[in-house]
Amino acid sequence: MSSHAHPTTARATRQAARPRPRRLRLDDVQIVDTTMLKRALRGTVVGNTMEWYDVGVYGYLAVTMGAVFLPTAAASVQVLFSLGVFAATYVARPLGGIIFGRLGDRLGRQRVLATTLIMMASATFIVGLIPSYSTIGAAAPVILVVMKLLQGFSTGGEYAGVTTFVSEYAPDRRRGFFGGFLDLGSYLGFAFGALMVSIMQLTLGNQAMLDYGWRIPFLLAGPIGAIAVYFRLKIEESPAFKAMNDAVDAVEGPAPKTGILSILRTQWKPLLIAIVLVATANTVGYALTSYMPTYLTDTLGFDPIHGTLLTIPVLVVMSAAIPVAGMLSDRIGRRPTVWIGAATMGVFAVPAFALLSIGAVWSTLLGLLLMAVPTALLVGTLASALPALYPTSMRYGSMGISYNIAVAVFGGTAPVFIEAIMQATGDPMTPAYYLIGFAVVGAAAAFGLRESARRPLPGSMPAVETPAEALELVETQDENELIDLDELPLELAAAK
Image (cartoon, rainbow, N blue to C red; front, top):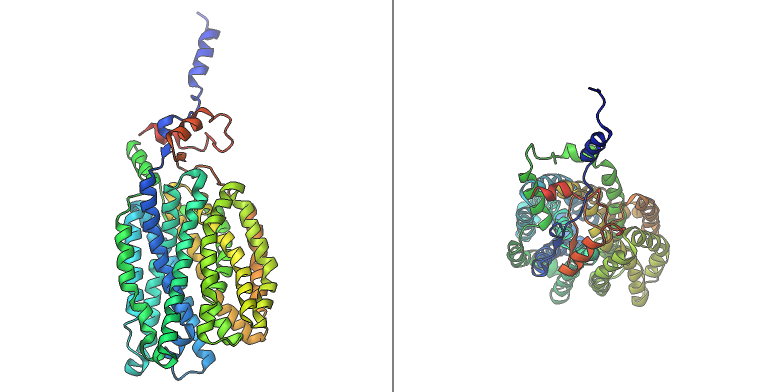
């Protein structure tokens, strides 16, 4: 008998050994529950609003807080102390991002986000209860620093978690639009904090603000935080995380590694890209928000009340524009929108600060609006672009690392760096040059950004809004350039 197999038998064996074509089935496609999506948006937006309410309150009280907690120091030292405490908040953020990100990838997004919000609101509330310097001396600024560190630690898990959460809830083709609502809440929270400070300043006067008025906006964080926690507890776990857990449970063998070492080893490139892009967006964002009250008051000579009031309408307009920027990124792509944002940041920086230096109300508003344009374009796009850099199993942890390192090193410290450099050089255009440098770096980093507009998240199945859209997706999967069957986790889907 011949030792060679029959040709027909050999061909059949090769065909049997050949992997079956990867196919997307109708029940693989996630149809977004609109009711749950809206509930998830409410639960996450209120938390972001809470976070930035405190940032706004502290930013607009920077001069007052320095005088309250270091009453015997020189005015320049008081300002640097206050901005330094603000920056210290961001020192704790990377640690919070690592710890809460790890927990969020293991235990789920919803429970961790409820915890971070409770910690964040409590720390803000306690700041309003700190005894004065005249009562307990140097312990007062120490307690302030400790509370701000605690707040930074909890906030480290907040933004990374909410962007992950909303991205995993949203339909693919409108992820940018829904992600934009997170930063709409952020800047509205900032504007609300600024408004509360303005009301206190107008009704109480400078001395009363120093005596007790500064406490009121912080104490309001108690009831505001309680409302935010109520909404957050109403949301359910994200569909992508539940689907991943179900699929992993159905597959025998150890769970995939999602610790920090695994993230650094496998995700180092998207981590670096995200850090640079977040640094770019937050440099202009924090220059417009947290630093601007100090710049308008100390450098341009506005009184504290007008230094606050002038920024509020700009923040409201910019907040409304952020979801529009997210919608634009859905249409033309994440990378083009980031490039436009970086370009406007570089081009508008000098004209913006030139207009501010005129000192008139009209020129100040116009200068602030020029800074608001790149801020809206960048933050409105990154809320959906960054989570799409990472797989589901590592998304929260990776976001926690990249976002918080960038914000700690380049975002929260931007006000104190700019102020220190400007005091050293005496050049009021220092902030403009600072922004131009980051705009160039951000535009270069965008070349490495994964284009994710209208595409499924890595490690997740496609998400659509209607059954008809799901059917069309399945029927057109072979020619649909937005669907890469080789990247979809079809094996896990089959294990469900």
